[in-house]
Image 1 (cartoon, one colour):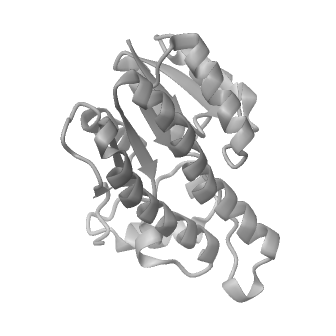
Image 2: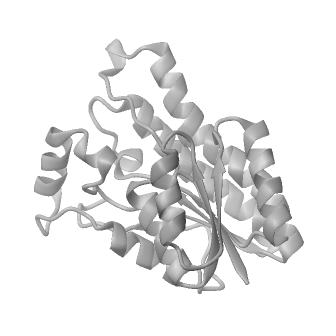
Length: 236
């Protein structure tokens, strides 16, 4: 039995990852914050054993309770997919302080919270794999996305550090740049989606199925850690 926790799994890429892991034989903890009906539908579609958990990853206490619930159910945690993320786009000079704080709290602090908490359970299980979902914007920056770009760049730094600190416990930590997708978040900015397609050397956007499939492959490897994988066709 293998157990995977997917944050932000009610829609978009998180949904696809949760479904693909379920098809691959993982028991899946489906984390969500606001979209309970959508998250419940994801859990219902997964053939394997599932657990539906509402938790704000930016709140360390809620993350701790989430981890205790998962461990009480299955007695182990093997995989953590840090997918939960938000964006509040604005030019930096016009950005509200609260918007900046909200984005960094969810995207970066949330990733740190879950990594800190779930790594303890992975150590008990004899190891595991943590995969952090970052972004092209974290490498290149993007006009109007100061907070989002900064948070996703921070995720890359966090990935490198966690990989070095957790390797002695047989915990691998990697990050993905999944590319611009036609998910609910991606469709929120038609201009950004058009730009991403133009910047792609194939003239196409990325696919959640491709990203989820790559994640399943990466979980089968034993000696890959501290790496950043780009899964799109914009030149990084």
